[in-house]
Every structure is written in structure tokens, then in C-alpha cells.
Length: 95
Image (cartoon, rainbow, N blue to C red; front, side, top):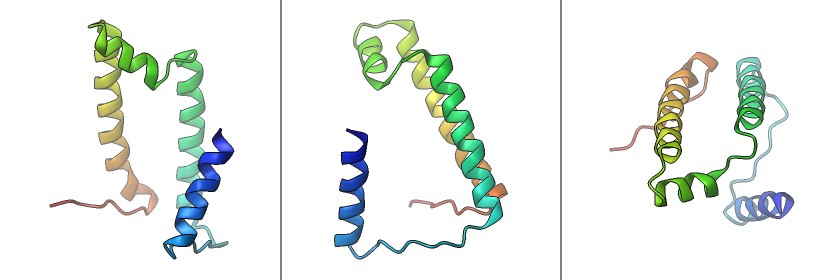
């Protein structure tokens, strides 16, 4: 399943003319990727398999864990976006 998603994204990028791999990765971007991967792995371990389906069923059943997941995900997204410039990554602004 994961390989199909990655291959589909690769094909879509190729068809859109956006596939341009670069072998020169800035060190700050590499550090950001390593830290992000470690945090994702740690978060997955803490969650014990809690995924988006569990989140949605928690919201639908009016369970507190679903709403806490929503707040934590939103706060993590804001924090991650604000940390991007520290690693030399751009932040897209809308509006």
C-alpha cells in the first residue's frame, strides 16, 4: 500500500513536470529530516497504533481522546511550521 502511494506521487510529479531530484541536500534540511523522522517514530510508538481512523471514530463517538488528538495535532502543526525557518526551509503564506 505504501509503495503504491509513493509510486503514484512519483508518477503525478513526473506528469506535472515537477520531478527534479537533487543530490545536494543542505545540511540544515538533512538535520530537519532526521529530527522529524525520529519524532514521527517516537510519536508512532507512543500512539500504539492510534491512527486517523481512530481519531475520526473518537470524534464521531464524542470521545474525549478524539478531541485531545485534534488539539495536539493542530498545535504540533503550528509548532512545526514555526520551526521550519530554523532549518532553512521556507514557509508558504496564503492570502
